[in-house]
Length: 330
Image (tube, rainbow, N blue to C red; front, side, top):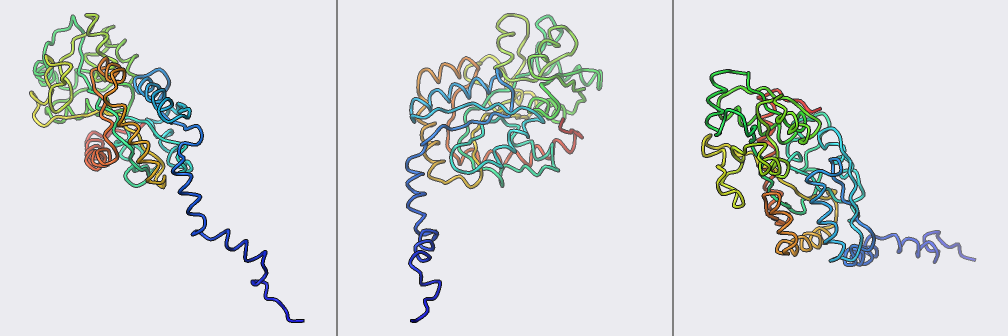
């Protein structure tokens, strides 16, 4: 009786056919077309209750209603956002995990060089969510009424003026460092565990000014406790037309804070496209526009290309600022 080669066995041939990538492709394509077929996790690398957390929960509600699956917020604070960012980098690229973060995404490579967290190489961009103006704020009863006056005082008393932010290496810390460099002055940075404690310290007279988002500062300005001197944007913010852009006084100064969504690098493009399209559909919803406007901003929800371009510009910018100022992450 002739011997049968093991490879000729029907059972073996069936196993080999089932294992071939060509026959797995239709199943994968079906899974991408059906996305999201199960709950989706949005990792936010900051604590619950902050401005970006509030934005995340708004988007999660809207995406759930539009796409028919729960979008669950997963707060992973710590180490300037690097803990949450690394969690997403290491997650399975199957469309069940995304990252919602701030402009700290562009500064993490400079602040934590040993961790090698370059988002341009390790994450897939999904969409810019919003530009969030960073504000320079002083006490309402303080001596300064303009950015120019602050810069002049800093020149008169080098190194004596202090500014607070929500943490060493935070986007607001870097905004203050970049302002000092661009204006040719020296400011002392005081780090707090969040923007809210920094604002409390400002109102108590412990520090001279704060760099923080309009989300965190406008309630105090509107209550008459603080004075908004300028925003760190290229142009005036439409919702704050009377507030100058700091670049009007310090040419070239821009320190954008922004929110964005990214995915593990190998996430299928079809899934990224579907999420990006779902986000873009939210941009003109009255409820979404109203919630963003209350924070002094507007939804962008632009798609992957704008976020990729932002990272290409800002990662090297913050590497330069961090090196010149000798800043280290917490």
